[in-house]
Image (cartoon, rainbow, N blue to C red; front, side):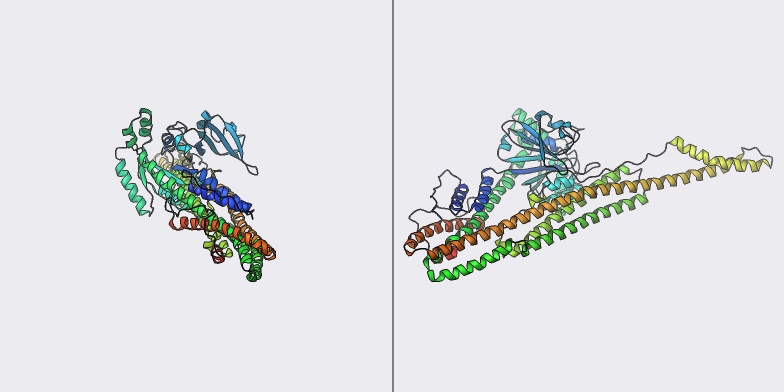
Length: 635
């Protein structure tokens, strides 16, 4: 291992990047390309932070107008009769351009460039889709907010008949840095909105409720107070920000600071700065600290083992035996016969079975509730309400199933980590990205309509047809008494028989409607179960691959470090006595660097937050070399 060149951070440089550069340099000098790849990925995150913000809410809450006002651009299509049907992702680009992300069963993701000015008119039947499903639209625009790393995702409205995007939107939430849930000031938060907010809050820690359209409703303050009470009763710790997209647009156009303050966007920008940007910086520092700590451990193991062999030849044999035993254990972790592989495989199998059963159980309960309600009511009179209730309840069931999947996946990751020692000593994988569906379709079915009721004329004809027999029968009998065919007795009999015929026909029509309604509900639930089942299996496969790759990497890095330590100790034990002094000095100098890196990482993890971690000073030639005992402490 050659001595890496020393670096000195400039006063204007970024400390994190300086420390990462030193660590990457040390890892390269140790021929640890696996550590270099991980450290460079963290450095890329520090260099190019992308903060993903999902904008969601129920139908017609002003999401697209809000995105336009936030950016000061007319990008999203707005209007009373227009609504977002395809997720739109907006990020920074020097030149405006847009692409469709297309998916198809058994095919790789495909991108198709579309004219930027047409993104507001694209729907699922667009010829640009080429017969595939449009997962989302990705557009880039020159904008100051987006240039700071913000990525906005405008989603379709959730809830309402024909809208079953809740599950798809919830699939995007785990990988989001923040979620803005919009609800206009016309009414208080409804129970479906609170359920959706609860699901979002469990999947993403940074959530805010935006009360929109406050310029249209004079009593919006009372609505906002009621919403705060609803959120408090639900046990949700979520900030609420009243905003007006219209006032924001006027403020930008007229360059009027007063309108800008009244729009409420100042409080929103404060939330984004404090809760999104600052929190992301802390998260990035924690990720850097974990990677620095891990890299320092791996590098110190190699350096310390070689230094022990050089400094104390009598202990080198014992050290080599310990490393050989550790290498055997590490190989066991990496092999397919390892216990962690079996735990992961069994856990994924059980998880997939439990999640599928939970999904079917939830959907069956919804279907049974709908059928019981249909048995007690006339479905033709309330079909629209049934459709809205069914869509919303199924969306809630899918969301709760997604939450349970997320919780169980994290629990499984912790169980697998126990095979590598203490769970706290092993970095747990991030399952959020594996949960992300990126808007790849909503698990939705189509609830067909019922056969329309017969007209009033048809109802009259049914009664007349039934009354004909009563009139004829009683009229013929009454002619024997010298009465006319049509007399009060025959007419009364006709009315009675006709009424009964009409009532029987009405009962038969109601029974047919109920059978038809139940069949429609079953088809709807079956369609949802079919599509949601496929999404669930795909999600389980992504989680399995994420956990497998993560822990395989942990096992491989451990084995590689032990291999390098074993070779270094053996080479040191067999080296010439004349060469040992120079090599000891070189190793001690390198261990100074590693020890300083680890102290810096530990300080970041203990104190946290920018500006509070311990200072990092790259070692110079005058730094005191560490002793053998210090090397053991580093190791």
